[in-house]
Length: 358
Image (tube, rainbow, N blue to C red; front, top):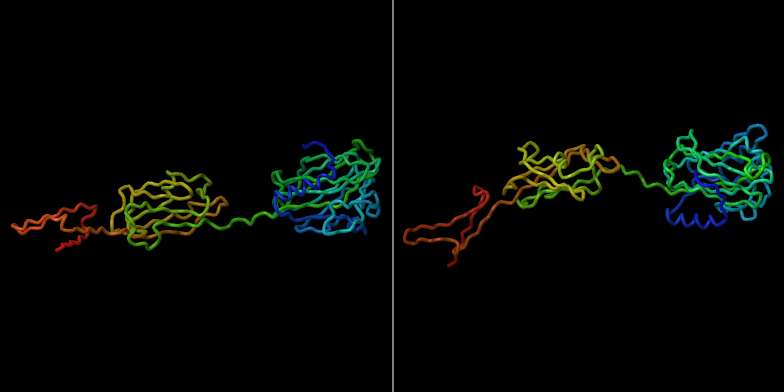
């Protein structure tokens, strides 16, 4: 439970500083209580983007005095009025101790929720307001107590930005209950310009990671000394939410000769910076086609978007070519022989160009 306090007018400056930190805020629920035609009218939201509502519990003599919400200096500063609204009536809640006011405040699609309102009491009105919140719509937790004064209305702000479960929640509710405190057991508590501001939540990520291969598909003359890689454009993990590492990255990869049905190529892997590096155990041979693929439904991003499609690359390594000039050739003119020695990794695929300068 947060300590009891009554916020002064200086909270306005603090709120606007907070807006600069959180970014552009949106008014998602608003009651200016200016329509006093009936109890139903005065408790209906002036504006709500996502289905806000208000319920007043009336027990015994507790009631909404919809016609009596006038005067009391609420109109002097018209604190927290929005949209250029002129001052009007306010909400007068008589004999509040046996009742409560409940605000149903869905925050679906919004974060960093801030609630603000002005309040005061009559001389014999309840001196303690206990504000409680709910994230499941049923169970309420005490958030803060406020001590309204028998004086000019004061502005109160509740910052729910760090309270778990309040953001993006269709079941968020706020309720106030009353006790005599330093006031009385009858009289009234009054409220005006009740607002809920929040910042729009980022759009949900529904796009799986992009997979990039090197060598790229249909590459010819790929170097036999370069280890193939599979890279992702964002942070990735295994689909069981565990981290990818050098060891388990190996089970994510299919590496074969020729094509998807070719013989498997032995390899190990490393994983760093969202990139799997494939290291052939015996290196790659020249002039050979290779097939490299990421197995589907094995890798996902941190928003649980898995790579479900089969992705792959087929590339061919460069052949071996050796050029010799006469300085590397041994000639025995008497015997009529020409002798030279070639040492390459795959002699059967090697070509030799002989250039004899005059």
